[in-house]
Image 1 (cartoon, one colour):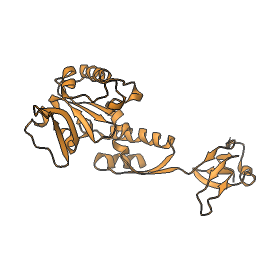
Image 2 (cartoon, helix red, strand yellow):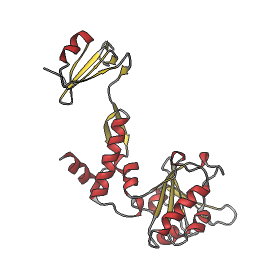
Image 3 (cartoon, helix red, strand yellow):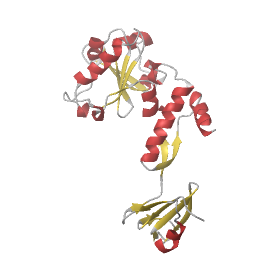
Image 4 (cartoon, helix red, strand yellow):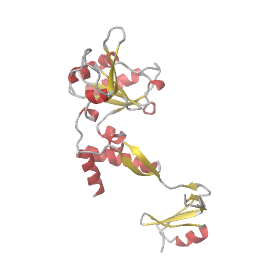
Length: 250
């Protein structure tokens, strides 16, 4: 049998009981055909085989991601038009974040959510998070949520509090917290854990449709494979997300 792909002249980590190393790998129809020495595997190379000389490089088995949020990660955020607030996206200061929010506000009807993700105050020139008054300056008529890199803390503006009916007197939700100024008692816009869901029960501020869910999962899957992840357990799968996975598998 002739292989579709052969990798040879490498160090192939087998992870077998003997922790042995092989030199070459042959693949047929997307499955392993042989893992052995160059001498045993190279005869499987045919005229149409993609043969890759590893030149001593290492091959390891694909990684398994045991806990992830693939369906609600960056793929879906891209599909929903959520602003990338990361250093890698060119954000260097609060001014950069506010400019991105102001730009999106120009093209959105009043009352529609504007979202920013992956904000990291440690990489901002001011070395601090924005607060609700910062956000109010650029868009008082759109609810805004800026989510930090960890995903357990976010910042919202006054419009977001107004739409959710949250005031200075509102109690903290179970498992969450609305931070308040320790002198005035005013909401600062900084919210933690379940308070995020109180302000925005659905990621992005609106229900996403099947096409968006599928697009997001497909994009994330490509990123995973490129990074060597071949299996992933998505811990949040319900409703439209479950259907999206089913459609992508069919």
